[in-house]
Image (cartoon, rainbow, N blue to C red; front, top):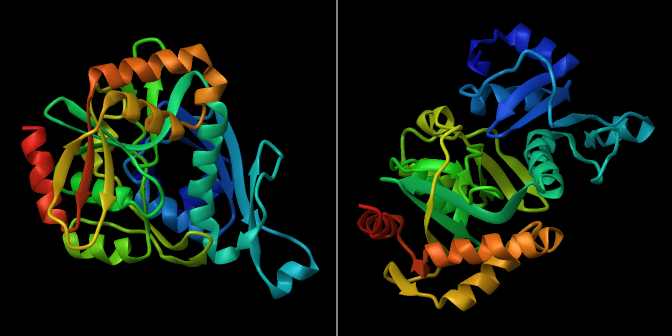
Length: 299
């Protein structure tokens, strides 16, 4: 069943004992007694499937830190299979910590895929891979495309199957930061955002609910057609510029989580991807102009 079909009491009980949640090719067992995690999952994961127990790829917990110090400065920790890989964070960052922790689990362990730090969207059978450095405007552009009818495969991670080279969907919430939050709120009345977390190590953070059709297509893989390196700049017209494939390969692998781990397999997958795609740099200021460029590219 979908998470939205659980009553509040059922969801709270499931989180107390371990909520088994399917997200793309992965299943997470999530335990938490915190209100931000409950509210975040309720608001942003309603379209996702809840599993009836069984095997889960990752078992995680986000809960309040205990002890005398926690009484004066409430904190939460992220636990993965009994290990805490991060320092505790303020209690009101609990949901953001869950999202970051889920990404960490996949990036550090799912080596049966090539994992790239990139957004992935698809329209008319043409998938776009958007690698982006912090501050480049990747997630803002991703949110705008997803809210404009593009199928969202992922905001944070391009997942490439080692067997067939296809892109595997992971349509989880889009991580928005700082000014992007209000930009996306104004962009569309359909934008559903979770609670805002202030003063995190990434600044002000909120998450955008993935479109329901994207979640429903979680098992439909895609073929990459474009690798586009976006960058927001002030006072420029939206423009695509061809990027040499050798240079695109080097920059793409610099954005890979596990390229060194995969060795020659990673090289072959990345090389095949670049060979199959048109590669561009993309600069933009205004989102409507950016959307027009992408619509022309994928028509």
